[in-house]
Image (tube, rainbow, N blue to C red; front, top):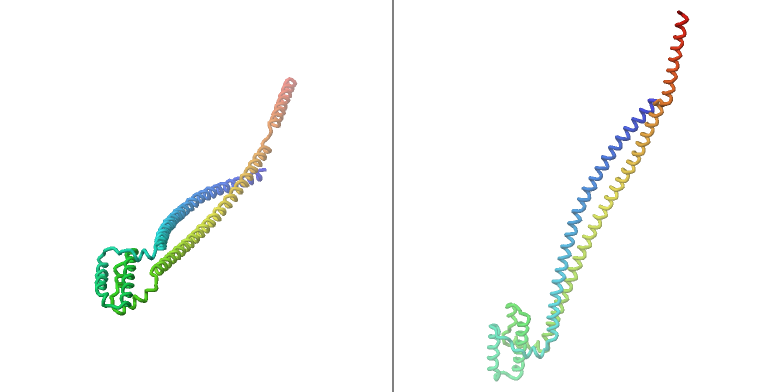
Length: 285
């Protein structure tokens, strides 16, 4: 009878030791989960901050590009709405670099009588072209490097100006503006494509990190659930061992009724012995 009790006691002690070990592992896993959540929250916060900063930069770039595009469109619309005849009739402003051209024109007017009709016509064309270029220079704020367009009046330059008699300078300027607008639009599109590619790469990296974190969390949760199930099994085993130990102890201890019956039997025997001794003493006397 003592052997099963010792076996059950040993099993109960082993179960308690295993339960304590499982509780320690569970506490350690809980601490690791808390640390892991803290480690994951910091990178997520940093990523959210970076995404917000990049979004703000993109919004600022978009606003800047929109302003530039609107200004270019206004300039193009203004140039398209202008009449070529008004350009030729506009009198250039008085500037230092215009004084030289005006002096040259006055000198040419004094020498008109010495030239033939063909030369006079070419000189008038030259004057008109100079006025057009001066007007364009004022409109677009050309740098001083553009003074190379001021031609000296000689036979070569007169022939060169005659080559421009059938050309419309406004068409060339409009074509140049359209080309600049096309280049700007192309640069804007390439810029947005590059930014879109960068954002896609960032989003892919974030999704990969989130998937890795999710898999790690699932693994830790599975381990935690397994530990909890093992703990419940150990609790059941310990409760079973306790009940078995209690039942065996109850069976080994004598019952109160048997003890009372044995006590009554012994008292009866003592009384019989006393009576027998009392009967023997008178006979001897």
